[in-house]
Amino acid sequence: MAITEPAWTPSSWRELLAAQQPDWPDLAALAAARDRLHKLPPLVFAGEARALLAALGEVSAGRAFLLQAGDCVESFRDVSAPAIREKLKVLLQMSAVLTFGATLPVVKVGRIAGQFAKPRSAPTELVDGVELPSFRGHVVHSDEPTPEARRPDPERLIQGYYQAASTLNLLRAFTKGGFADLTLVHTWNREFVADSPAGQRYEALAGEIGRALRFMQAIGIDLERERTLHEVEVWTSHEGLLLDYEEALTRQDSLTDEWYDCSAHLLWIGERTRDPEGAHVEFFSGVRNPVGVKIGPSATADEVVELAERLNPARVPGRLTLIARMGAGHVRDALPPLLRAVRESEVPVVWACDPMHANLVRTPRGTKTRHFEAIMEELAGFFAAHREVGTWPGGVHIEFTGEDVTECLGGSEAVLEEQLDHRYETLCDPRLNGRQSLDLAFRVAELMRSV
Ligand code: PEP
Ligand code: CO
Image (cartoon, rainbow, N blue to C red; front, side, top):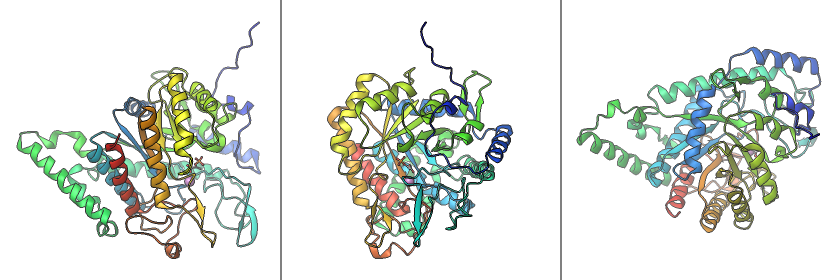
Protein backbone atom coordinates (compact mmCIF):
# COMPACT_ATOMS: atom_id res chain seq x y z
CA MET A 1 0.00 0.00 0.00
CA ALA A 2 1.36 3.41 -0.91
CA ILE A 3 2.12 5.67 2.01
CA THR A 4 0.18 8.90 1.55
CA GLU A 5 1.35 12.17 3.04
CA PRO A 6 -0.92 13.45 5.81
CA ALA A 7 -3.15 16.20 4.41
CA TRP A 8 -2.28 19.83 4.96
CA THR A 9 -4.28 21.72 7.57
CA PRO A 10 -3.54 25.09 9.20
CA SER A 11 -2.12 23.10 12.14
CA SER A 12 -0.30 20.28 10.31
CA TRP A 13 2.98 22.16 10.92
CA ARG A 14 2.68 21.13 14.58
CA GLU A 15 3.88 17.62 13.73
CA LEU A 16 7.21 19.04 12.57
CA LEU A 17 10.12 20.89 14.07
CA ALA A 18 9.37 24.63 14.23
CA ALA A 19 12.66 26.50 14.49
CA GLN A 20 13.01 29.92 16.14
CA GLN A 21 9.81 29.84 18.20
CA PRO A 22 9.89 31.68 21.55
CA ASP A 23 10.09 29.56 24.65
CA TRP A 24 6.60 30.55 25.88
CA PRO A 25 6.61 29.97 29.64
CA ASP A 26 2.83 29.64 29.93
CA LEU A 27 1.33 27.37 27.27
CA ALA A 28 -2.24 27.84 28.54
CA ALA A 29 -1.88 31.60 28.09
CA LEU A 30 -0.51 31.00 24.58
CA ALA A 31 -3.51 28.82 23.70
CA ALA A 32 -5.88 31.48 25.05
CA ALA A 33 -4.20 34.20 22.94
CA ARG A 34 -4.40 31.98 19.88
CA ASP A 35 -8.13 31.43 20.46
CA ARG A 36 -8.74 35.13 20.71
CA LEU A 37 -6.79 35.86 17.53
CA HIS A 38 -8.72 33.15 15.77
CA LYS A 39 -11.97 34.99 16.44
CA LEU A 40 -10.74 38.42 15.34
CA PRO A 41 -11.39 39.71 11.81
CA PRO A 42 -8.80 39.06 9.10
CA LEU A 43 -6.36 41.91 8.47
CA VAL A 44 -6.24 41.40 4.72
CA PHE A 45 -8.57 39.63 2.33
CA ALA A 46 -8.04 36.68 0.04
CA GLY A 47 -8.97 38.79 -3.00
CA GLU A 48 -6.22 41.26 -2.17
CA ALA A 49 -3.67 38.47 -1.84
CA ARG A 50 -4.78 37.25 -5.27
CA ALA A 51 -4.35 40.73 -6.74
CA LEU A 52 -0.78 40.83 -5.41
CA LEU A 53 -0.22 37.34 -6.80
CA ALA A 54 -1.22 38.60 -10.24
CA ALA A 55 1.06 41.64 -9.91
CA LEU A 56 3.97 39.39 -8.91
CA GLY A 57 3.13 37.14 -11.83
CA GLU A 58 3.96 40.12 -14.04
CA VAL A 59 7.28 40.45 -12.21
CA SER A 60 8.11 36.78 -12.72
CA ALA A 61 7.40 37.25 -16.45
CA GLY A 62 9.87 40.16 -16.61
CA ARG A 63 7.24 42.84 -17.15
CA ALA A 64 7.42 44.54 -13.74
CA PHE A 65 9.76 45.07 -10.80
CA LEU A 66 9.32 44.38 -7.08
CA LEU A 67 10.27 46.89 -4.40
CA GLN A 68 9.95 45.37 -0.93
CA ALA A 69 11.13 47.60 1.87
CA GLY A 70 10.67 48.63 5.47
CA ASP A 71 11.96 48.23 8.97
CA CYS A 72 14.06 45.32 10.11
CA VAL A 73 11.58 45.04 12.95
CA GLU A 74 8.67 47.38 13.71
CA SER A 75 8.53 48.70 17.24
CA PHE A 76 5.45 48.77 19.47
CA ARG A 77 6.67 52.20 20.57
CA ASP A 78 6.57 54.16 17.34
CA VAL A 79 3.22 53.40 15.80
CA SER A 80 2.60 57.05 14.99
CA ALA A 81 1.11 58.71 11.93
CA PRO A 82 4.32 60.67 11.16
CA ALA A 83 6.51 57.55 11.32
CA ILE A 84 4.22 55.66 8.93
CA ARG A 85 3.82 58.67 6.62
CA GLU A 86 7.58 59.28 6.37
CA LYS A 87 8.19 55.64 5.52
CA LEU A 88 5.48 55.76 2.88
CA LYS A 89 6.91 58.96 1.39
CA VAL A 90 10.32 57.38 0.86
CA LEU A 91 8.74 54.23 -0.55
CA LEU A 92 6.75 56.35 -3.02
CA GLN A 93 9.84 58.35 -3.93
CA MET A 94 11.87 55.21 -4.55
CA SER A 95 9.08 53.76 -6.58
CA ALA A 96 8.77 56.93 -8.70
CA VAL A 97 12.52 56.81 -9.40
CA LEU A 98 12.38 53.14 -10.39
CA THR A 99 9.22 53.44 -12.48
CA PHE A 100 10.42 56.51 -14.34
CA GLY A 101 14.02 55.30 -14.60
CA ALA A 102 13.20 51.87 -15.91
CA THR A 103 9.77 52.57 -17.46
CA LEU A 104 8.30 49.53 -15.78
CA PRO A 105 5.50 49.09 -13.26
CA VAL A 106 6.81 48.73 -9.71
CA VAL A 107 5.02 46.43 -7.28
CA LYS A 108 5.34 48.05 -3.85
CA VAL A 109 5.42 45.81 -0.79
CA GLY A 110 6.16 47.16 2.69
CA ARG A 111 7.83 45.26 5.48
CA ILE A 112 5.09 46.86 7.50
CA ALA A 113 1.92 46.29 9.54
CA GLY A 114 3.11 43.06 11.12
CA GLN A 115 6.90 42.86 10.86
CA PHE A 116 7.31 42.30 14.59
CA ALA A 117 9.16 39.03 15.14
CA LYS A 118 12.85 38.29 14.68
CA PRO A 119 14.78 35.07 14.22
CA ARG A 120 18.11 35.17 16.04
CA SER A 121 21.39 33.38 15.40
CA ALA A 122 22.07 32.88 19.13
CA PRO A 123 19.59 32.25 21.96
CA THR A 124 21.27 34.79 24.22
CA GLU A 125 22.96 38.16 23.76
CA LEU A 126 25.21 40.35 25.88
CA VAL A 127 23.77 43.75 26.83
CA ASP A 128 26.22 45.88 28.79
CA GLY A 129 28.03 42.76 29.91
CA VAL A 130 24.84 40.97 31.06
CA GLU A 131 23.75 37.80 29.30
CA LEU A 132 20.04 37.91 28.40
CA PRO A 133 17.66 35.98 26.16
CA SER A 134 18.10 37.48 22.65
CA PHE A 135 15.55 40.12 21.64
CA ARG A 136 12.96 38.47 19.37
CA GLY A 137 10.69 41.44 18.69
CA HIS A 138 7.99 43.31 20.58
CA VAL A 139 5.39 40.72 19.62
CA VAL A 140 7.27 38.34 21.93
CA HIS A 141 8.68 40.50 24.73
CA SER A 142 10.09 43.89 25.63
CA ASP A 143 13.53 44.98 24.46
CA GLU A 144 14.36 46.24 27.99
CA PRO A 145 17.58 44.59 29.13
CA THR A 146 16.30 42.63 32.12
CA PRO A 147 15.47 38.93 32.38
CA GLU A 148 11.86 39.73 33.45
CA ALA A 149 11.28 42.03 30.47
CA ARG A 150 12.59 39.35 28.10
CA ARG A 151 10.06 36.77 29.30
CA PRO A 152 7.83 35.88 26.30
CA ASP A 153 4.27 37.09 26.88
CA PRO A 154 1.49 35.79 24.56
CA GLU A 155 -0.62 38.87 25.30
CA ARG A 156 1.79 40.62 22.94
CA LEU A 157 0.47 38.55 20.02
CA ILE A 158 -2.86 40.29 20.49
CA GLN A 159 -1.16 43.66 20.81
CA GLY A 160 0.72 42.92 17.57
CA TYR A 161 -2.58 42.20 15.80
CA TYR A 162 -4.06 45.54 16.88
CA GLN A 163 -0.93 47.46 15.99
CA ALA A 164 -0.87 45.82 12.57
CA ALA A 165 -4.55 46.76 12.16
CA SER A 166 -4.02 50.43 12.97
CA THR A 167 -0.91 50.67 10.77
CA LEU A 168 -2.76 49.03 7.90
CA ASN A 169 -5.71 51.34 8.38
CA LEU A 170 -3.51 54.39 8.05
CA LEU A 171 -1.66 52.91 5.12
CA ARG A 172 -4.93 52.31 3.31
CA ALA A 173 -6.00 55.90 4.05
CA PHE A 174 -2.72 57.38 2.84
CA THR A 175 -2.58 55.30 -0.34
CA LYS A 176 -6.23 55.74 -1.34
CA GLY A 177 -7.04 59.12 0.16
CA GLY A 178 -4.99 61.51 -1.95
CA PHE A 179 -1.60 61.50 -0.26
CA ALA A 180 -0.07 59.19 -2.86
CA ASP A 181 -1.49 61.21 -5.79
CA LEU A 182 1.16 61.39 -8.49
CA THR A 183 0.52 65.11 -8.93
CA LEU A 184 1.97 65.48 -5.41
CA VAL A 185 5.23 63.81 -6.41
CA HIS A 186 7.15 66.96 -5.32
CA THR A 187 5.76 66.96 -1.82
CA TRP A 188 7.16 63.55 -0.93
CA ASN A 189 10.65 65.05 -0.77
CA ARG A 190 11.53 65.91 2.83
CA GLU A 191 13.85 68.69 3.94
CA PHE A 192 16.67 66.46 5.06
CA VAL A 193 16.48 64.58 1.79
CA ALA A 194 15.83 67.55 -0.52
CA ASP A 195 19.21 69.19 0.18
CA SER A 196 21.20 66.08 -0.65
CA PRO A 197 22.44 65.19 -4.15
CA ALA A 198 19.88 62.38 -4.31
CA GLY A 199 17.14 64.79 -3.21
CA GLN A 200 18.08 67.30 -5.91
CA ARG A 201 18.15 64.56 -8.51
CA TYR A 202 14.71 63.56 -7.27
CA GLU A 203 13.43 67.14 -7.64
CA ALA A 204 14.52 67.10 -11.27
CA LEU A 205 12.78 63.80 -11.84
CA ALA A 206 9.61 65.04 -10.13
CA GLY A 207 9.73 68.01 -12.53
CA GLU A 208 9.89 65.66 -15.50
CA ILE A 209 6.96 63.62 -14.17
CA GLY A 210 5.00 66.87 -13.78
CA ARG A 211 5.81 67.81 -17.39
CA ALA A 212 4.76 64.36 -18.60
CA LEU A 213 1.44 64.76 -16.78
CA ARG A 214 0.87 68.22 -18.27
CA PHE A 215 1.68 66.82 -21.70
CA MET A 216 -0.95 64.11 -21.28
CA GLN A 217 -3.46 66.71 -20.19
CA ALA A 218 -2.61 68.92 -23.15
CA ILE A 219 -3.36 66.16 -25.63
CA GLY A 220 -6.74 65.63 -24.05
CA ILE A 221 -6.33 62.87 -21.47
CA ASP A 222 -8.60 63.51 -18.51
CA LEU A 223 -6.12 63.13 -15.66
CA GLU A 224 -8.82 63.53 -13.03
CA ARG A 225 -10.46 60.34 -14.19
CA GLU A 226 -7.28 58.22 -14.29
CA ARG A 227 -7.49 56.39 -10.97
CA THR A 228 -3.94 55.04 -11.18
CA LEU A 229 -2.62 58.61 -10.98
CA HIS A 230 -4.37 59.25 -7.71
CA GLU A 231 -4.12 55.99 -5.79
CA VAL A 232 -1.41 53.41 -5.28
CA GLU A 233 -1.35 49.87 -4.00
CA VAL A 234 1.09 49.28 -1.18
CA TRP A 235 0.92 45.67 -0.07
CA THR A 236 1.93 44.43 3.37
CA SER A 237 4.42 41.71 4.23
CA HIS A 238 6.35 40.28 7.13
CA GLU A 239 8.43 37.26 7.98
CA GLY A 240 6.00 34.48 8.84
CA LEU A 241 7.99 33.42 11.84
CA LEU A 242 5.58 32.83 14.73
CA LEU A 243 3.46 30.00 13.46
CA ASP A 244 0.97 30.23 16.35
CA TYR A 245 0.14 33.76 15.19
CA GLU A 246 0.05 32.90 11.48
CA GLU A 247 -2.15 29.85 12.05
CA ALA A 248 -4.64 31.83 14.13
CA LEU A 249 -5.06 34.36 11.30
CA THR A 250 -5.42 31.75 8.58
CA ARG A 251 -8.90 31.63 7.14
CA GLN A 252 -10.75 29.73 4.44
CA ASP A 253 -11.81 31.95 1.58
CA SER A 254 -15.55 31.74 1.09
CA LEU A 255 -15.25 32.18 -2.70
CA THR A 256 -12.68 29.48 -3.42
CA ASP A 257 -12.53 27.38 -0.21
CA GLU A 258 -8.77 27.90 -0.27
CA TRP A 259 -6.76 28.87 2.80
CA TYR A 260 -5.17 32.30 3.12
CA ASP A 261 -2.94 33.63 5.86
CA CYS A 262 -4.82 36.88 6.45
CA SER A 263 -2.15 38.52 8.63
CA ALA A 264 -0.53 40.13 5.53
CA HIS A 265 -0.64 39.99 1.75
CA LEU A 266 2.78 38.37 1.40
CA LEU A 267 4.66 36.32 3.98
CA TRP A 268 8.23 35.18 3.71
CA ILE A 269 10.20 32.36 5.28
CA GLY A 270 13.56 33.42 6.71
CA GLU A 271 17.02 32.05 6.03
CA ARG A 272 17.00 30.26 9.41
CA THR A 273 13.61 28.57 9.02
CA ARG A 274 13.60 27.41 5.39
CA ASP A 275 14.27 23.71 6.07
CA PRO A 276 12.16 21.95 3.38
CA GLU A 277 11.22 19.32 6.02
CA GLY A 278 10.47 21.90 8.71
CA ALA A 279 7.28 23.43 10.08
CA HIS A 280 7.51 26.78 8.27
CA VAL A 281 7.72 25.29 4.79
CA GLU A 282 4.87 22.91 5.68
CA PHE A 283 2.66 25.75 6.89
CA PHE A 284 3.28 28.06 3.93
CA SER A 285 2.93 25.25 1.41
CA GLY A 286 -0.78 25.19 2.24
CA VAL A 287 -1.81 28.83 2.18
CA ARG A 288 -2.44 30.53 -1.16
CA ASN A 289 -0.84 33.92 -0.50
CA PRO A 290 2.23 34.88 -2.45
CA VAL A 291 5.18 33.70 -0.34
CA GLY A 292 8.87 34.48 -0.25
CA VAL A 293 11.90 32.54 0.91
CA LYS A 294 15.27 34.01 1.85
CA ILE A 295 18.15 32.24 0.15
CA GLY A 296 21.57 32.61 1.75
CA PRO A 297 25.05 31.72 0.45
CA SER A 298 25.01 28.18 1.86
CA ALA A 299 21.92 27.14 -0.13
CA THR A 300 22.60 24.46 -2.75
CA ALA A 301 20.86 24.29 -6.11
CA ASP A 302 19.09 21.08 -5.04
CA GLU A 303 17.77 22.72 -1.88
CA VAL A 304 16.46 25.72 -3.75
CA VAL A 305 14.75 23.58 -6.36
CA GLU A 306 13.23 21.44 -3.59
CA LEU A 307 11.87 24.58 -1.93
CA ALA A 308 10.49 25.80 -5.25
CA GLU A 309 8.74 22.46 -5.84
CA ARG A 310 7.39 22.32 -2.27
CA LEU A 311 6.09 25.87 -2.29
CA ASN A 312 4.94 26.16 -5.87
CA PRO A 313 4.02 22.68 -7.10
CA ALA A 314 1.22 24.10 -9.27
CA ARG A 315 3.77 26.43 -10.94
CA VAL A 316 1.69 29.55 -10.42
CA PRO A 317 3.48 32.71 -11.61
CA GLY A 318 3.81 35.15 -8.70
CA ARG A 319 3.30 32.53 -5.99
CA LEU A 320 6.98 32.30 -5.04
CA THR A 321 9.62 34.98 -4.59
CA LEU A 322 13.16 33.82 -3.91
CA ILE A 323 15.00 36.54 -2.02
CA ALA A 324 18.72 36.04 -2.50
CA ARG A 325 20.90 37.44 0.30
CA MET A 326 24.34 36.19 -0.60
CA GLY A 327 26.76 38.93 0.44
CA ALA A 328 28.67 41.29 -1.82
CA GLY A 329 31.62 38.88 -2.00
CA HIS A 330 29.58 35.77 -2.88
CA VAL A 331 26.72 36.81 -5.10
CA ARG A 332 28.55 36.68 -8.42
CA ASP A 333 29.69 33.08 -7.82
CA ALA A 334 26.90 31.69 -5.68
CA LEU A 335 23.84 32.97 -7.54
CA PRO A 336 24.24 31.87 -11.21
CA PRO A 337 24.06 28.09 -10.47
CA LEU A 338 20.86 28.66 -8.48
CA LEU A 339 19.33 30.75 -11.26
CA ARG A 340 20.10 28.02 -13.80
CA ALA A 341 18.77 25.21 -11.60
CA VAL A 342 15.49 26.99 -10.87
CA ARG A 343 15.04 27.82 -14.53
CA GLU A 344 15.55 24.15 -15.42
CA SER A 345 12.95 23.12 -12.84
CA GLU A 346 10.42 25.24 -14.74
CA VAL A 347 8.93 26.55 -11.50
CA PRO A 348 8.21 30.22 -12.17
CA VAL A 349 9.69 32.49 -9.50
CA VAL A 350 10.43 36.12 -8.84
CA TRP A 351 14.10 36.59 -8.03
CA ALA A 352 14.68 39.50 -5.65
CA CYS A 353 17.89 40.73 -4.07
CA ASP A 354 18.18 41.46 -0.36
CA PRO A 355 21.54 43.23 -0.30
CA MET A 356 21.28 43.90 3.43
CA HIS A 357 21.38 40.73 5.48
CA ALA A 358 24.65 39.19 4.34
CA ASN A 359 26.52 42.49 4.51
CA LEU A 360 26.37 43.18 8.23
CA VAL A 361 29.62 44.26 9.84
CA ARG A 362 30.64 45.54 13.26
CA THR A 363 32.68 48.65 13.81
CA PRO A 364 35.72 48.39 16.13
CA ARG A 365 33.40 49.70 18.86
CA GLY A 366 30.97 46.87 18.24
CA THR A 367 28.14 48.76 16.48
CA LYS A 368 26.25 46.68 13.91
CA THR A 369 26.27 48.49 10.57
CA ARG A 370 26.30 48.07 6.80
CA HIS A 371 28.28 49.93 4.15
CA PHE A 372 26.24 51.54 1.40
CA GLU A 373 28.88 50.48 -1.14
CA ALA A 374 28.74 46.83 -0.02
CA ILE A 375 24.96 46.97 -0.48
CA MET A 376 25.43 48.42 -3.98
CA GLU A 377 28.12 45.86 -4.78
CA GLU A 378 25.72 43.02 -3.95
CA LEU A 379 23.02 44.63 -6.10
CA ALA A 380 25.43 45.05 -9.01
CA GLY A 381 26.45 41.39 -8.62
CA PHE A 382 22.80 40.32 -8.57
CA PHE A 383 22.12 42.13 -11.85
CA ALA A 384 25.35 40.75 -13.35
CA ALA A 385 24.38 37.17 -12.38
CA HIS A 386 21.00 37.54 -14.10
CA ARG A 387 22.61 39.07 -17.17
CA GLU A 388 25.03 36.13 -17.34
CA VAL A 389 22.28 33.50 -17.06
CA GLY A 390 19.59 35.36 -19.01
CA THR A 391 17.04 35.49 -16.17
CA TRP A 392 15.04 38.47 -14.92
CA PRO A 393 16.37 40.42 -11.92
CA GLY A 394 12.92 40.92 -10.49
CA GLY A 395 13.31 43.13 -7.47
CA VAL A 396 15.01 44.49 -4.39
CA HIS A 397 14.31 43.90 -0.72
CA ILE A 398 15.75 46.46 1.66
CA GLU A 399 15.61 47.69 5.25
CA PHE A 400 15.00 51.41 5.49
CA THR A 401 13.21 54.06 7.47
CA GLY A 402 11.89 57.48 6.52
CA GLU A 403 13.84 59.13 9.35
CA ASP A 404 17.24 60.79 9.22
CA VAL A 405 18.94 57.98 11.14
CA THR A 406 22.65 57.17 11.10
CA GLU A 407 22.74 53.39 11.08
CA CYS A 408 24.32 52.44 7.73
CA LEU A 409 27.61 53.95 6.57
CA GLY A 410 28.17 55.86 3.32
CA GLY A 411 25.82 57.13 0.62
CA SER A 412 26.19 60.22 -1.55
CA GLU A 413 26.05 62.36 1.57
CA ALA A 414 28.11 59.92 3.56
CA VAL A 415 27.31 58.80 7.08
CA LEU A 416 30.70 58.38 8.75
CA GLU A 417 31.70 55.87 11.39
CA GLU A 418 32.01 58.53 14.08
CA GLN A 419 28.43 59.67 13.32
CA LEU A 420 26.82 56.28 13.86
CA ASP A 421 25.70 57.00 17.40
CA HIS A 422 24.06 60.37 16.50
CA ARG A 423 20.79 58.69 15.62
CA TYR A 424 21.14 54.94 15.91
CA GLU A 425 17.57 53.93 16.69
CA THR A 426 16.92 50.52 15.21
CA LEU A 427 15.78 47.73 17.50
CA CYS A 428 17.59 45.18 15.38
CA ASP A 429 19.46 45.64 12.08
CA PRO A 430 20.79 48.98 10.75
CA ARG A 431 18.48 50.62 8.18
CA LEU A 432 19.13 52.97 5.27
CA ASN A 433 17.89 56.49 5.96
CA GLY A 434 15.70 58.42 3.49
CA ARG A 435 18.65 59.88 1.55
CA GLN A 436 20.48 56.59 1.29
CA SER A 437 17.28 54.86 0.16
CA LEU A 438 16.80 57.39 -2.61
CA ASP A 439 20.45 57.05 -3.60
CA LEU A 440 19.92 53.33 -3.84
CA ALA A 441 16.80 53.75 -5.99
CA PHE A 442 18.70 55.91 -8.52
CA ARG A 443 21.54 53.40 -8.68
CA VAL A 444 19.13 50.48 -9.08
CA ALA A 445 17.31 52.35 -11.87
CA GLU A 446 20.67 52.61 -13.65
CA LEU A 447 21.31 48.90 -13.15
CA MET A 448 17.86 48.15 -14.55
CA ARG A 449 18.57 50.15 -17.66
CA SER A 450 21.67 48.03 -18.20
CA VAL A 451 19.66 44.77 -18.35
C1 PEP B 1 15.20 39.83 7.89
O1 PEP B 1 14.79 39.97 6.74
O2 PEP B 1 15.01 40.69 8.77
C2 PEP B 1 15.99 38.61 8.24
C3 PEP B 1 16.14 38.19 9.48
O3 PEP B 1 16.53 38.07 7.15
P1 PEP B 1 17.22 36.64 6.91
O4 PEP B 1 16.20 35.60 7.23
O5 PEP B 1 17.57 36.73 5.46
O6 PEP B 1 18.43 36.57 7.80
CO1 CO C 1 16.95 42.57 9.41
